[in-house]
Length: 79
Image (cartoon, one colour):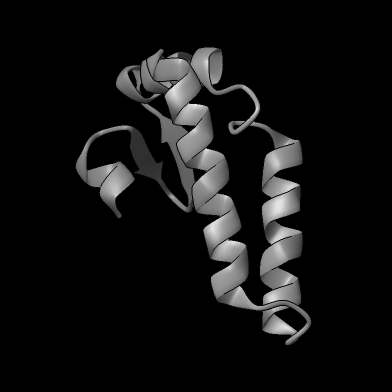
């Protein structure tokens, strides 16, 4: 995985652990994107993906919504 290739994580046995670089990157992202690096965001995203899988939601509409949310958030952070 890319996270392993870039040394953000290290695999030990069957578990993944953050490297010091990974911890620094996470801290940086969490400080600037706390609303996106959260359990709530992950839960909402999983719910959307489940709805798409069940055929209850259109994937392109949900993808556009996610893109717009991320774009708007990045614009705020970029200033």
